[in-house]
Length: 272
Ligand SMILES: C[S@@+](CC[C@H](N)C(=O)[O-])C[C@H]1O[C@@H](n2cnc3c(N)ncnc32)[C@H](O)[C@@H]1O
Image (tube, helix red, strand yellow):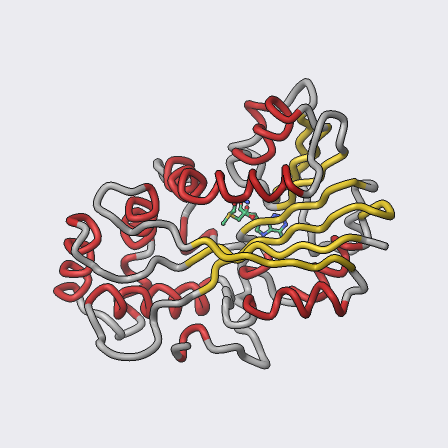
């Protein structure tokens, strides 16, 4: 595990909100960038949600729903009754209606209590938030007895150890920039199963997907778009310069990186 993804006692908490100054979601292309990530990870997430019993009539809360690819699938194809929550619902609102309701809300705000659910899902959210344990506990508290909490976040299997290829250096710069700009911390995510058990959940399980990092794959596109969007912040870390970043981009675009993508760890547990 590299310095950028090692667990910290004191997470960096920037004064501004979730990555607005870093990702500038109002700039064109942000929805498409998030969708590339969804293409890489959605199949894995869907299979797990199905296995945990998502079905017609299930009451589901999707927190930090983003562009809503999971929330929309749950509502339209699974037949669940879905509440999709995000601080920024601009990408969700066009799909609201029928079995999909949307709510603009901050999950960390005092009094966040949108109801009780059979399934509560949050993907790529807690790693960006300070106090992930408290947020996980709050989400567990929204389950009906027998309901499942399903949490997914990035797990970094790449940046530790030699050799320092341009790709690895770029990834380290990315994690450092995210930690400085948002407070993102993926150092603790391998501890998800223990965290869920400590919250009193039972039948805890976890699994990891590392999507293929081949030329033209959705995840390669996602990292290229992410690097492009936060380029200045990555360069400001001093861990890469423009030449190294350019080499890393070429390796990713041409499929010669010969490395692992950050993975998705999905962990779940049932409220007794
Ligand atoms: C990386 S995106 C993940 C989107 C989606 N869950 C996915 O997996 O594709 C994180 C989302 O969480 C939202 N978010 C960040 N902080 C939040 C908070 N405190 N309360 C609610 N939503 C938040 C962001 O607006 C963003 O849409």
